[in-house]
Amino acid sequence: MNSTKEKILDVAEELFADYGFSETSLRMITAKADVNLASVNYHFGSKKTLIQAVFDRFMLSFTTDLSKEMERLDAASTPYQVIDVLATLINPITKLDNLRPNGSGVFMNLLGRAYAETQGHIRRFAMTHYSEVFKHFTRLLQSTSPNLKPAEMFWRLHFMLGSFIFTLAGHKALQEIAESDFQQKVSIEEIIKRLVPFMAAAFSSDAIPSLVINGASNSDIDMARSLGEI
Image (cartoon, rainbow, N blue to C red; front, side, top):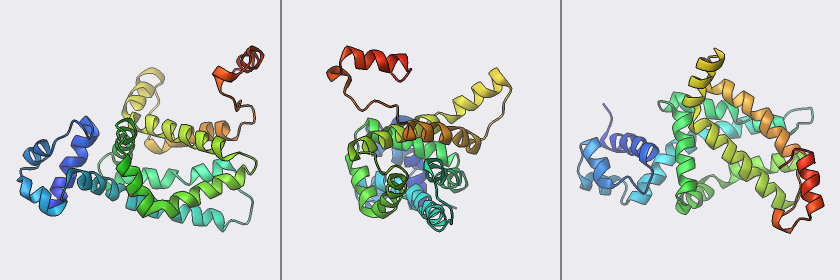
């Protein structure tokens, strides 16, 4: 039987994923977990700390597995490309389903809500505890694209993260559409394997214009449109 602390974490994870952090109150959590507020305060101290603990269960597993994948890439005798770096995410993400029911989808849903609700403390928490893993991943990407300026690296990383979160948070809907419309049964791993080459191509593209649309000339925009880039 789950401990009181695990029960609180399980219920908080479900409610945060379904309703978001702002809309989920401690009263909702304690009612569904059938515990009192004192138990939440004893184990976590605050709602913010509880949110971080929910993330930490996923992050510990994900970053441990990601580090192993990146170390294997570092040790490879042949040069690696962007797609190889992004492929290091496949096993760590899919293995989250063994950690928690629908773990990969729930984790991405939580990440999406954290960004949408501007939960800055989650980013600070992640960078405090797991910054070396994220820096390692960024260094691998940078080594494949040494001429990419830091600002452009930021945008491309941000867009890739958004694609990952959006796709995996809604993976059930994608699976249902694929099965009903195209008679394809796809796993989360297969979805990620379709997504990785797409993201690698976008990240590596030399054709993406590094311009602010409002400041671009009409000829710049017309040229980009003609190439199908915007």
